[in-house]
Image 1 (cartoon, one colour):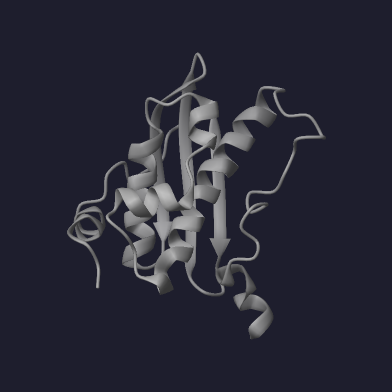
Image 2 (cartoon, rainbow, N blue to C red; image 1 turned 90 degrees about the vertical axis):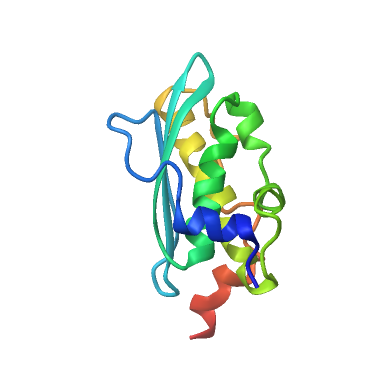
Length: 148
């Protein structure tokens, strides 16, 4: 069901924790269905130098959070914004279809943390401001609240 990489990142997650005085912090998820991700970023000279996460959720949520932090470190802010849920899933050698929402959350957590960074630094104007899930709101994960 899960790839060896997913299991490795679940059993041995990288970058767990918080960054004190993080330059960007983003939290996404839905407490009603159980997956919540919080990502912390340290950014110096437009380069992400550190990333940490705290995730409440299933093994796939932990694994995608862990992989997302590995993918963003060393990237510029703009490069990190280009990381998609598909890139996170592919880096983990795939996810079962019913767990793809976890990769969506990882992408959204990156975007939310970067949006927070841009807001804090006056780099986000109202014409470009968006919510963390602006691209993925058609994802079934976000519609679970409506079905209950």
